[in-house]
Amino acid sequence: MDKKLRNLFTVLIIVFSILTVIFIFTAGTDKSIFRKFTDNILIDIIAAVVCGAAVMFISFYYSMITETQVFDEIVRLNLKKIIRLKEKGWSDEKIAKDLAYAMNLKKGFRHNYAVRKFVLLLSNIDKIKEKEKNG
Image (tube, rainbow, N blue to C red; front, top):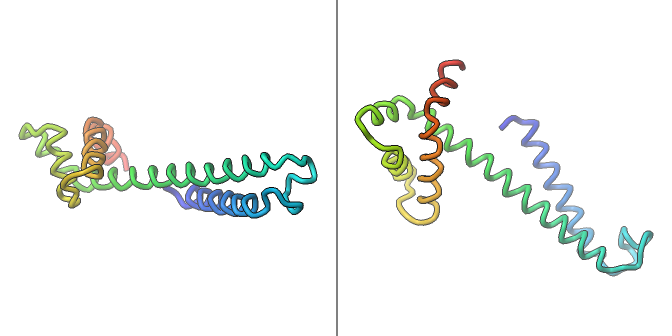
């Protein structure tokens, strides 16, 4: 992920976090931002929930992108070994389990997630080979 995108995520998380705190602590009071427009307290609560949800979704999306890059990098660094294993007849799932084990993910949710992620990447190994050749 490039620096501009990372900075954008950081700024969005900070802005929505600050707004969430403001909306929570001013909900129902005369200091509420929305009090100038309406007397409905429900608007304050909805704004706080929406901003909190925005923080949550932006954080999850950022984590997903960052984590995906880690798996891509692992496959890229082990590309020669993966190609040799595929030539020996290893299945994508067997290679994925081997990579997950090497990451010290032996069982549980994280292991299953890593295996699925690696299988997806290994099924597109030709694209990764092309990417390596071109740059």
